[in-house]
Image (cartoon, rainbow over all chains, first blue to last red; front, side, top):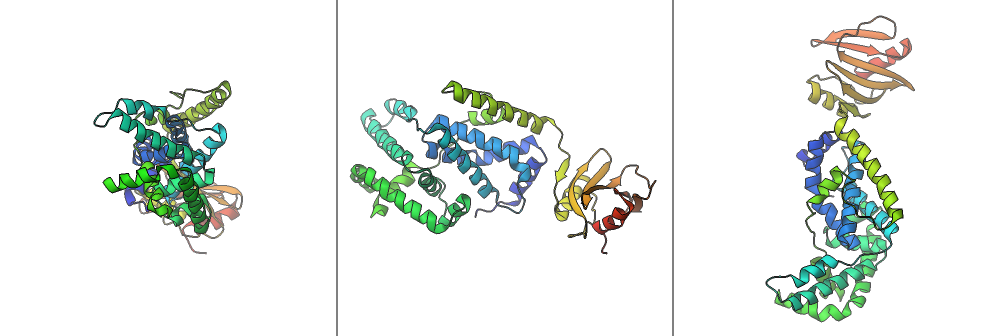
Length: 193
Length: 164
């Protein structure tokens, strides 16, 4: 797994002693990671804020129980994953990204129509991801948003690497089927990139 | 086949993003923002917010001068870092279970248990041997006071720093 350097350990130890400045440092170091997972899992900026907020409050509440010999990032990932799953159970729905559609019609440097089509395509991908089973969706997010290996994902989710591979493979096939009409456009986009 | 396009498409769509600036404000003050979508979720959020606020108040306002740990190495390092005193705690003291340490104005206090009975090792301060449950000595310019629930526990507590 990812390894903390000495400074991170010092920060964590300071948090365990109740140092509020240290908690701010910890927050700044990990806020993007936490929010990204929350957003990519929920597909909803408001929901992502709720999940990220809840995750950091859990970190704050439980930091005293964190063992110095454990991997902090794995511990943090587990908290975020659980917050995502709890949020999913509570909400049972995914809000469309209206903000991105509004952004589309105010875009610069790209025609509004092209951008609207691109945003619509992105929203379609997001909606397809949102329809995946929670455990498949989480594997997809940890793999593509965080770039984690199968072993790392397995450790966070408490399952085997084989299970991770299986869930990811099933998710790929489902998404490929649901988004087959976007295939040519994506391949053209990759060719132009 | 799906590797041709779905994986790059997912990587592009699911790339990391920056957290909004207001996230810190929401973590620091959980009652701020949070538009509620229903009365039910509003009540739950109010409960969550109240609990989180209480936790944050405790975290930020209550002075934290203690360490909860059963690890002799961690306690030794923490005490040395906070007070400059190197207490030679043994890695596995027989019959004694460390539980933590704290530092007050002029005293380091290391907490332990012998069986289910509490004991304290004080370094510094004005603790003197006044009964069979307390033993005081000086070492490297510091006064050490071992305090136990029973005289027998005192013999076991010597294992904190000594062998047998």
